[in-house]
Length: 314
Image (cartoon, rainbow, N blue to C red; front, top):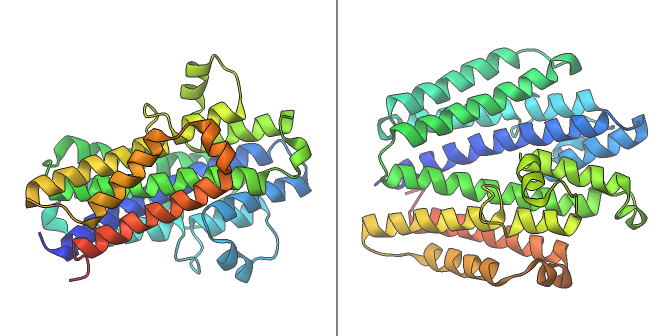
């Protein structure tokens, strides 16, 4: 398989996943902002920008964190190369470059997503239409995933798509948890308060985990339990443990197809083994921020090793 084909499929998946994650964060931020006064709601929107790692680029063009500025910047602003519209267009460009590696259903789903989002994001998004726009982004992403799962051979293309998806998803979950402790809470004095519980609920909403968590925990909102759910629970498809297990599984598929392993296999095995050995008490003893920072770094190194080992730019 040509490295540039692997690169196209891998980044197609990452761009689509990142676009959906941004929509989920905006939805959670909007729900939180609706219950806050003007000053506090700006902090909620600032946390959304911080989570997606676009603080510097946002501040170059905007001085305040009002909702309409933030969501239009992250959804459609032309000067933002990491907007949802730009990411979906990049995914379409990647898909077009590897068109022969995709099924017709996958290509049509991606192309349709781009056309639909280009239409709904053609003009600034008002608050009254924000919910429907975000729902459209999530729905289109689901259609692409369904096309991939239902029509693609379980070969290299499928494995690179799944690897890209779960590396991006793990990065997003880790960043959301990290921002919870270092941006969302106004003061450590709020820990355990009603505000803290509402913010934890918003974290679960941003990863579509609220209902699953409540179902498993009889509705109790416990910060330590939520952290365990999002980091270590292998039943939850956006937990760190689940995502790394999927990356390891699809890398194993590549090793079977190519007849050999690479340095990326060893790195992801080590990362997965560490996650399986950890307890939530051990993570909090180490420091949640320190653990998540280390995880994001290791996850990025795995992605870089995959790009290098499979000669993405050859």
